[in-house]
Length: 419
Image (cartoon, rainbow, N blue to C red; front, side, top):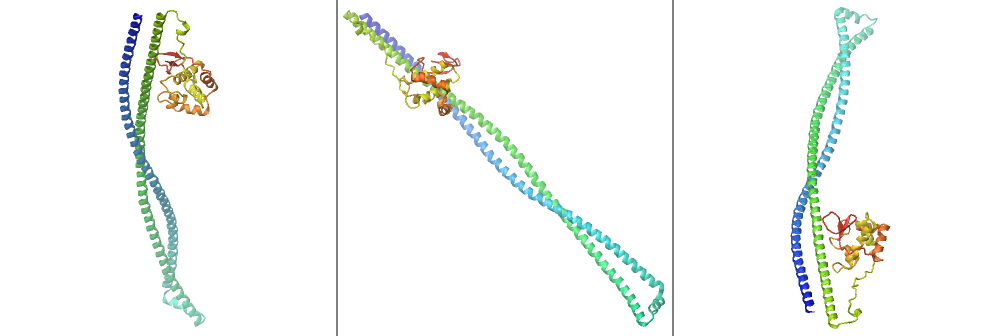
């Protein structure tokens, strides 16, 4: 009996030492992992600062670009006004050219009339000169009476006066037309000069628009570069966040697995000690009813009672995590959830288990779980959820699973490894 007790103590000491060693190793690893998370957090903060800097730069460039676009819009409006003004001036020049052409025609006609009048007048003067004063008097006094002679004299006088008046009139008309032609020509020159001035404004504004558009393009290129840089840092931040989540999840898993390991070791130790005590009592007392000394089987695993929309949530999670896996793979995912509920290392409700940080990505990260829950999971996933939740078909004792990339030891089922 003494040897048996010594053996039990010896085993207890060894188990305790192993637990202590495991505990020290675990917390050393946790400390390193914590440092790793700190490094990732620091890197993430730096990337966030860079992302924010480039985002602010892009925003500032966007404002400058917007101001230039407003300037181009204003210049285009101004250019439209100038284009209309040029169009009006060109119309005025066209009208003035027509007026000048009409005036030239009038002037040419007046010159012809003037020349004709002048020629007629010369003929009459030459006729009277060639006839001489005697012939002139003969005409005046060749009438039948004095009255007839007076009438002829008046007629000659009126002809001479008419010639003189017509000559003066055509001279005045000629001068008026010439003045009009000169004025029209001056107006035309002024209009051409005005058009040239407005054309210079048009060219200047067009150049401003062209230069501004080039600046806008340059800003657009800079904005694109800044946005691309911001996007790269955003990806880095997301990668940092994912790495932090993965590391935090790994630490949390390690803590839980360590706790489960300690609990199992403690239960095994207690079971061995109980068995040792029972063996000692049996040896000391002799024949005792075996039914009284044999320990009863451990059957203290609690039975979970579903509540609320647990079935909907479990079916939605199964679709998100194993919707493309075999039916058995779906049952395995459901088993992990139920094992967590029944473990002292996790919350004791399905809702709390699903929404634990760093555990189920579709629930706490991507948001896909909420979408599937809102529309309802497919019937196969509901069937698996019912079998696990209502019928208690727990196909394994795992507490965790992940996509199988070869980095984790465990039981590989489909695309997942369970452990």
